[in-house]
Image (cartoon, rainbow, N blue to C red; front, side, top):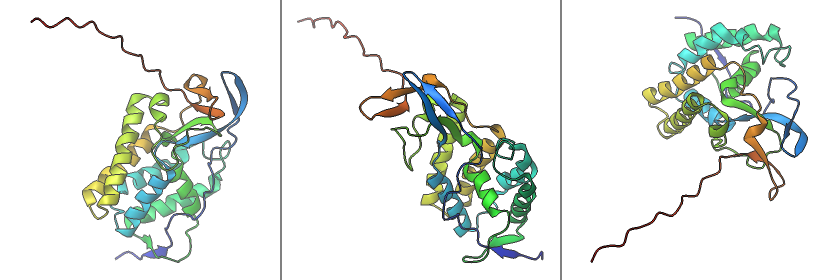
Length: 238
């Protein structure tokens, strides 16, 4: 039997911030120089819940496909790694060591234990996966909180939005049945597809945003619903 090393694998108690470096500013019609940020489609809360449900029900076998992908491709996320990102390239091997141990079962969870050297950066890789992000104004007035970002349907291409919508549903299904291995595998398969399909966040497009005068800030610009023309109704025959 391989030797097992135990580490505290609970989610980080505070947000370390996005790893992509300077996001810069952007313009929307009538307003210039707005501070930008990266917005999550599936919320950080939901991603954290997926990890907790996996951790507390020993479901890392379900996450194996994603862990194996990250083990082999962590260095491919060049936007996260300095430069231009903020993850030190010398720390990437520590992330690889952690995910390899999780995948092989040689690393396990011990509540209250020490942190693996690679955990902080692993958490940033996971929580800030680029396929789950789009760039937009920082001080948007339609921020969804812990809910799925409905504005993403306007900003993302349909296949990416469908993937993330399905992932959101699978995460919530697992939270309802956290011991269900098939549900856990389906959720982590969504993470694996997102991780392999997208290496940079969705770019900012000013056409997707507008200024909401009532709220006093930017919001996602949803296509206006065309009001249906009233139809002529033929009189009923007596």
